[in-house]
Image (cartoon, rainbow, N blue to C red; front, side, top):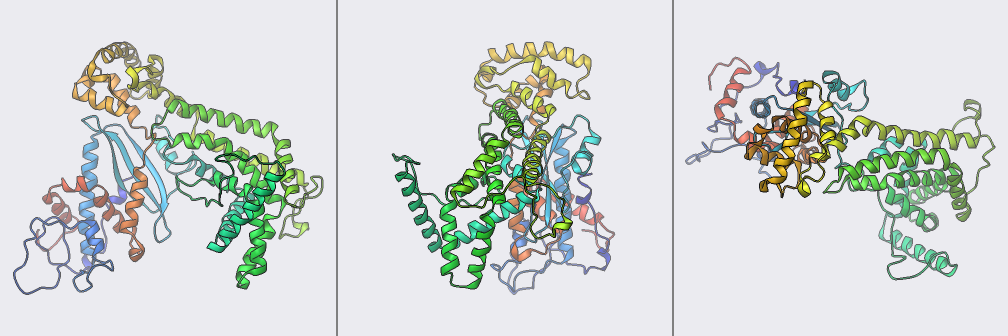
Length: 568
């Protein structure tokens, strides 16, 4: 299902101009203009996707750059199909997981990357790029790719990639609420306006310095080494390294200074456009709704901030991470049930400090930009408490429950028992048997009985064998078991190890595939079609597999794509 688009041919091959073959037997490429003198020996040369793409770049000489006519692309399609077949052959009916992520290419089109993760015959964890698809619908249990996989295999489990920042996901979910989406857009606009030039940044720092001096004089802050350091508004980025929580914290601390800078721009701006941006931004941030959303998201992201940081640590402690997941769920539920009054008090104090108009919670809520006759008659209390406070927290809880369900959490906790670090101190036979029970298609009832005895023999053997005492990960354990043929001695245990290793707890392969996409489909080649881009990237990313393919196999596939007058 995932590979159908990789092997498709073209219906218009017969109408395309035929191109003379070059000496390079690996790929069929256009022939450049003839030159005087002896031709160089190209029998051992290879045209890589990067080199082919560079032929159209501005750095390549224009007269010598060959035109990328369709037959050249079909040469790459043959190479890409053979590369994919080699990956499937190496997989050899083993267990595998599918890593899926999405990103925008240079033409602002969503691209979904598909990567396979499996354990090869030598016990090495291998991740191979399969290709891109122009459509991406990964969310939802009853639609999209996730539902299709679960429909085919009931023992398939969704695992959140710990290398991705959970905070970004929670922010994206919160943006499904109109008020929160408007809030984050306004924060981004505020940072752009206030930090739009060096002079504005200097004015912001000067205003913040004055605010700190006032707070020190009034006793609101205390002085000391390392305290009250110079700070600035932090721009939140939609990457694993961006922190919306840090942005919100800095904005709360520098709110007065930001307002002063906007007022300076409004008075001394050099153009009406600058003054207009400053005026509209100032009008929107000096509102009760903005102050409420600011503190609501500060509290919500503060609850999950430690979890988001823990999930990205290089040496990931799965047990600690799952503990933080459960803690975050409980804290959000406690916030929903008991912390409305404290949040409202915090917002009221903030509004009073910064001269923001305070709303009467018993009055009718007014929706800006709409006639009152067309809006439901609700109070401010109902809007802020039910439609905003409860709704946003419920969205966060639902997202955490979807990403860290009870079954997935149990699976992650149990798989940590296979870690060989510190003389297999995490070993727990009952939890490992529980992992096997989660895969009923692979472990029968008789296998579970045999696994119980096999695990007892396995742990005694491992702890008494010097070759297994200095291992630091389950991946090293798998390789060492294959080297010492322990995979044959304990086949059920090794099957358990392979199942655990296929779970992509923390990996950045999909991110690297997006980085490679920006090299091939850049601003100068932003009109590349999906198929052409996919064929180039398969051979570019999996270059080691591509290098191992016999030239004859690629030429035979190219020949069989359509009946031709000449045989290669």
